[in-house]
Amino acid sequence: MELTEIPISRIMHREFEHVTPETPLAIVFEKFSERGRHDLIVLEEDGSFVGVIMLTDILGCINPQMGIHAGRRAAGLLCMLRGADQTAGDLVTRSHIAIPDDSTVADALAHMARDQRPYLVVVNGEGVAVGCIELSDIIAFLRKGGHL
Image (cartoon, rainbow, N blue to C red):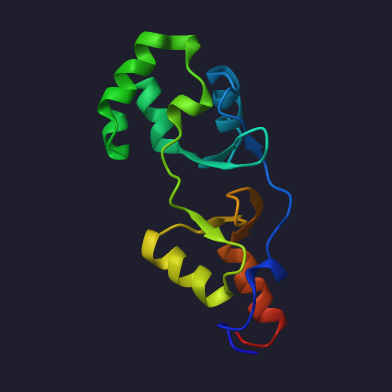
């Protein structure tokens, strides 16, 4: 089977950690204190995909100069001014890492390469997050299938 024929729904995870836009900054910091965490997916209560908070967005709250990497100097300053009133919704910046659920493995690999992201959030036609696919999932699938 060709990569252009394999639907990502066949290998994506249907369960993944996320927060809502209303999640307080203290909980966001707690999540980012977990070893190895580099990002956090943000979904509305109904599951609609909002975006992703990246580690650089968190750094912008600690030190506004570090937030420049995310292109959000003003957001870093606002974070310092608002302090504990900040929520996950105030920090979310990366909504472009979503891919439709009818995409193929080839589509996912092309999207990952273009945006230099090792995972994508899979959304249905209504924009609801239905899964997450990681590069490691694709590699494992291809190895098991004898493609690698």
